[in-house]
Length: 134
Image 1 (cartoon, rainbow, N blue to C red):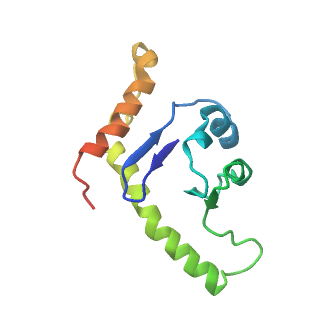
Image 2: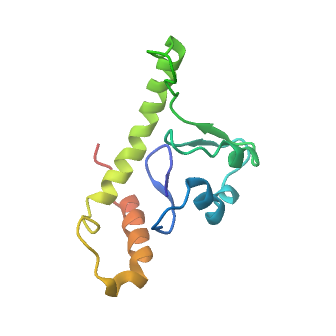
Image 3: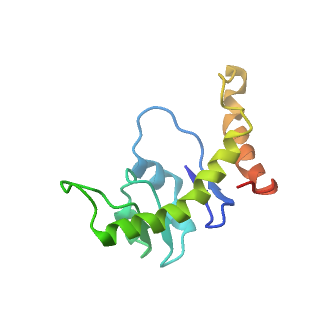
């Protein structure tokens, strides 16, 4: 899991996980709720169903609206989607900056298995010291 401020700086980096673990379980395990302040807004993708966890801190989950059975969004939902997209672009850019290191584009040697979480964290946090290229 990767957290970003509205300006695009990396603010949270989780350890890496393999296998099948749900997003809810990862968040419970990480204790990310402890880092949130009451009334914070948390933006996530549609698949991150964590509203109940955020409710314990009175935080608001912001996710794009679901289309459900309708053929198209209502005008209000379309505007909400546009507003979310404007902010999400900063998160996407932060993730892109991590990927630009190309460290995770090829297999990682088993000899680095004990250090992979540190490598991941350093790559994420180093992006805060790079110039933001938009």
